[in-house]
Structure formats: C-alpha cells, structure tokens
Image (tube, rainbow, N blue to C red; front, side, top):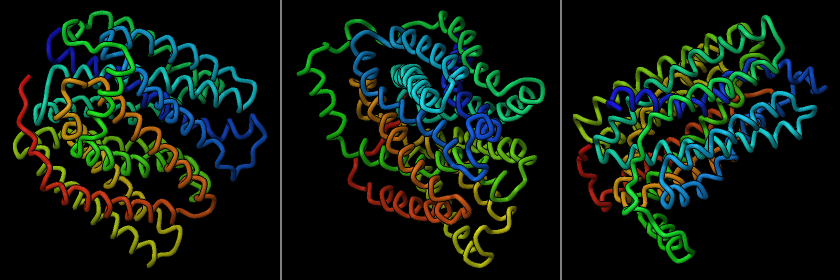
Length: 398
C-alpha cells in the first residue's frame, strides 16, 4: 500500500469515530420527541458522551495490540462498532441506546488505537506530526458532510436510518482495511503477562513528556466535546436557529480541516514543539477575547460573536492535536500501543466526562462553555511553557 492510500485509509478508519457523532446531531430534536423529553432537555448530549466514554477500552486494546499486532485488534473493533450501532438504531428506550453507544465507543476505541499505533510504528517525531495533520485534514471532512447527510436522511426517513449509516459505512471501510499490512513485527511484540503490562504502563505514565502533552490534549478535548455534544442545543434551543445548525457545524469543520493542513507544513518546517506553543498562545488569546465579549454583550452573546470564536478555537484545537500526540508518543516507540491507548483513554474518557459536565450546565446560557475555553487555554499554555526541562523532540523518519 502506497503512502497516499495508507493516509486515506487511516483517515477513513478514524473518521468512523466522527461519523458516529456528527451525523446524529441533527436527530436530537426528533429523539427528544420520540422518548418524551422536553424541548429544553440536555439529555441527548449523553448520546455523544456515552460514545466517548466507551473509549476507556483503549487501555485494554492497547495492551492487546502490543501483544497480538495492530490488525488483530482492528478486526475485533469493526464488529463491535457495527453491531452495537445497529442495536442503538432500534433501541426502544434511552437506557439501551446509551449502553449500545458505549459499546460502539469501545469498538471505535479498538480501531482508533490500532490506527494511531500503526502511524507511530511507521513514523516518528515531526514527521509523525505532519502525517497526522494530513490524516486529520481528510478526517475533518466528515464533520463537514455528516450533518448535511443526517439532515438529508431525516427529510425522507426516520432518525433510525441516520443511526444505521455509520455501521453501513464501517462495513465498506472494513473491507478496504483488508489491504492493510501489519506494522508490528512478531519479534517486537510484548509478552502478555502482568509483569510486562505493569512495566509498559509504568514506562508510559512515568514519562513527564507524555503526561504533559496528554494533559494538554485532554483539557482541550473537554471543551471540544462539550461544544460538539451541545451544539444542536446551543443553535436550536438557546439561539432558536435550528435551520443554521448544519451550515455552522460544517463551516467550522471546513476551517478546522484547513488549519490542520497548514499545521502539517508548520510542524515540518518549525517542529512540533515550537508550533504547539504558537497555537496555544493563539487559543488562549481567542478564548480570553470571547470571555470578554460575553461579559460585554451578555449571556448568550451575539450569535456571530460566539461562533466566530468557537470556529477559531475549534480550528486551533484540531491543529494542536497532531503536535501534542506526536510529542506525547515520541519517547515511547517501544510501547506505542500502550502509549496510544493511555493517551486516547485519557483524552476521550476524562475529556468526555468533563465535557458532559459542562454541557449539563448549559440549559439556557453558554457562559460555562466560554469560561471553560478560557481556563483550559490558560492551563494548557502554562503546561507547554513549563516544558523546557523535557527532552527535545527529534525529527523523525519514516
């Protein structure tokens, strides 16, 4: 498989996580009607939160992928994702839907972990940051297309058919993934025993560089997941402009895709470490300005003010992630599967839990989200500028 096809396939595998979220956002009003929720309810955000929380399984799949290889775990994840996605579509109540979504998240965690570890097997350092940026550039077209696809399906069929779309796409991607070759040779695999697992975990969590950049990604993802889970509520309920949802969501995704493409050039030219500092300074500045404007204009602020700020913050966030993942995983190539799983578990599980808490506070106002953006931006900036004693990242080779 050539590099171009590998990047496209990896982006498609990772896009299944985004598809399982973004295509469903336009259905939340219908789901509230279906299950007798009030129009003001934020419970539908849990459809996203439980999927994210299913990512806790990454820690298990990371161990297994270091032992049995990346392809074996990839091929376990697809059935979990597909079957539970079908169950969620026909769930008779929200409880069963949330359980199915959690299991779908577990399936997504398996394919996500395998994909990230596979990239780390093949690339390292600034080169990995560039490859991840190119993957994310393709990946981010999913949030552009998915809301419109969800709206189109809703116009001719039930919301349940929207839920069936990700499993259907996953079947096609699974068939394509059969062309993928194993990236972890048998002689580089770790033994599956408690001592080996404990040593791998300790090697990961005792690495200061890993902890620093994983903390940054986790904090940023908390704000991002809160926005994604609440975006339909913010646009449709707080601002009462549901017809604008797909356009606003897609526009932000387009800007984010462009920003990751720019980052792929910046990280290769200036290095991941320097680039992430610039991006975090931009993030904190925009978050601070948005907070100030919210105080000036009131809560909620003028819609255009909020969404210009959210667009810039989301685009900057998604440009930061390839750099933070490369910096976090760089010193841990010998346990890439474990490192990728701890990294993913942290930012998905902890980030989703914090994001869900923030979403629960936004019944009538968006100030909790605006404040979270600012606090997270400042904390991340402090973390990145206190990294002077960490080992410098080396430029990687494929």
